[in-house]
Image 1 (cartoon, rainbow over the protein chains, first blue to last red):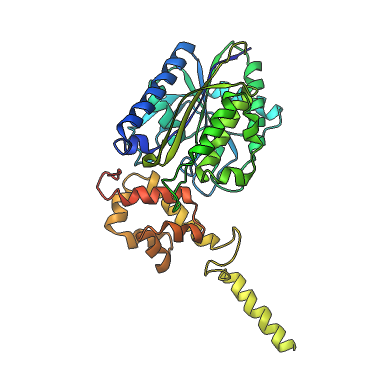
Image 2 (image 1 turned 120 degrees about the vertical axis):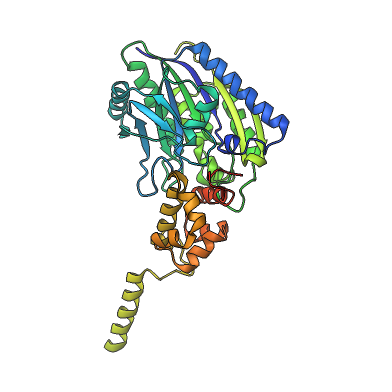
Length: 277
Length: 113
């Protein structure tokens, strides 16, 4: 029986490393503080596996082939794949055997995920790790990539259900492994559209309020139009829903929220109690 | 009547094969400029992930865009970083974000300004 020892949902934003000076100093400090709090929380949890659920950005996968769900199965993951990110090349250790078993568990629970033996990771995984776990070696990283970018997209309900399957699979994994979950993405932002730079703070705060009240399932019930009001980048909320589903909708504690037009994103950071999991 | 019907079938058949229905951007749905937009997407992906391609792109943009088969009109939209136009053309906006960064990446390192 393995168990979840920490769970985080957090925004990623490639402009934080690529254009660090763009945001106002107070917001830069607040984001750094949120990263430090998450790093402390993860360090205290002593995870052996760090499952990072993140959206694909047509970077790890070329536009010609984007699977709906992908579990990493590599010995090691290089990144970032983007040449412009401003994060130096790095490699995180993986675990093919453990992730193959994890993939088998997801398949047995009705999710036909791809198991990928080689992935060069994009900022969805690399940017959070750069700030909250920059060390190589341990814990082993397990990327779970979700297509949030190339239509047709998986539904929000299925993202939540994948999370439920992931939670059940982790609980059934042999070896008493300590597993931390990070859901990376969102909140509101418009990527590569004329609206880029706009942030829908009202939408973001509603999402965070639902999570704080233990009503995360309401996010999974949003219609496509209700997500679209927060921009095409808000589709990344699927990564959060996978973690929320794995936790059975437990309430989260909001570590911080900063709407940063200069970094084109509403940045939210949440930690979850995993007591008794 | 048969002659007229044959002409209509011929005309629309050719239009279908050339995929020029809706090339003005008016056709609704995901088929609009599907193949051309895909070529632009492939180029934008490669520019983001291929070491050395960005400096080469700025040194000889026409040659690079020619390798991906972009038309003059498409190349103009890319050069001008016309995000709205390219988005309406069917290019995935997430890749267009890379184009915006690319516009600030004219240095030899290929990084944002």
